[in-house]
Length: 181
Image 1 (cartoon, one colour):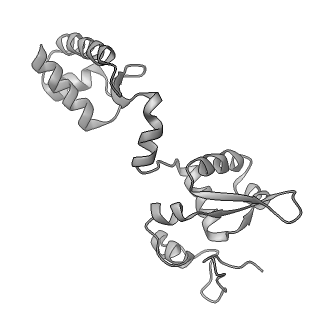
Image 2 (tube, rainbow, N blue to C red; image 1 turned 180 degrees about the horizontal axis):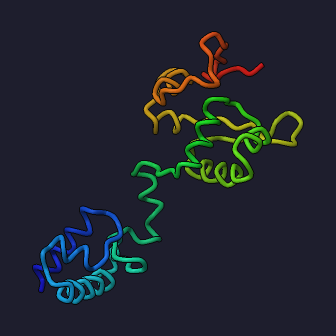
């Protein structure tokens, strides 16, 4: 049983995604009943050792870091962004500094949630505009570091292989953004 538990642990570690008992059994060429029994023991082993890892069994089985240690993971691992959030970040990067109200017009009301997530991840900064009614948003050095960008916004345009919204003859501000107007 110990060897099967170790093999299951290896599968969960390497796949890093939710698996069903039948998936694990197929990978290991074992009977699903044996896999289920060993998996339940493995879950109990993780629960009793009070470590940083656990096997979550809500929608299948996955080896993951416990909730109370996620702050450490976020510091060390790349940021995962959902496609809608990434699109919002792209608009910010291409039009920075951009007023939050304009961003909402371009990306819809979900832009507020996206901005909050991007702020929490340190990829953008937000400051009140001169009137104090809206915010101006721009990317941070962490954004450039995360996407391995050097230079200005044209680097991003080339990286993403897009040219809409940024013309070669548009002036670039000192901060590396396209000046609107």
